[in-house]
Image (tube, rainbow, N blue to C red; front, side, top):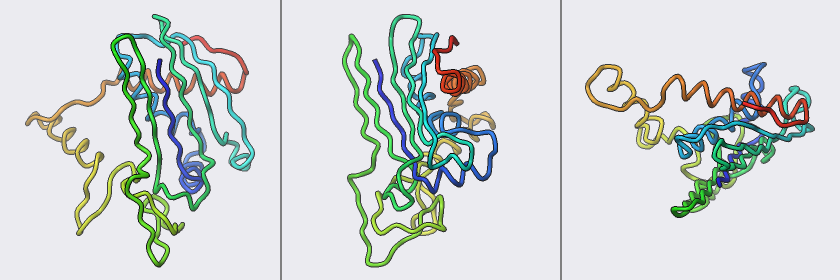
Length: 205
């Protein structure tokens, strides 16, 4: 079984909703978690998704505020995944907080990617990297998903992923981190989840 959640602030949700008329919390935000879980579940095929959502805060954008879904795999494995755009603008996470639980016959894995371990509370408010028009009084450092700037340089997962991808394309090492087939499978699952919310029934994949 797997449990995964990823939350972003309302400021991030609003920025996403303004720039893209077609994206949803599932397609935009939960896609990171779906990608991870499908990778962890390699060899298993998702066959059904059942999702629920609601809209109040983001109703003006014609989007859901949150979405939770249950994915059933062909071998009986089950993943429960959720995302929310509801944390307030001043939520201490720069961008996102994530948590994952995996439990299986061979052991278990827990990942706390909430970034509550390094907390900054400066005397003056600071802008969020993703939505600099919003300030926070307390910040979970390291919670900007791509990484952080320090001393004029950029550090973090997106830098490493980009460097690896460029090296792979140039055939000088690196790693191709995803295939088109895998990417399409992630999108198919998130779109099926949105359809399940609208039709209020499980959707076969």
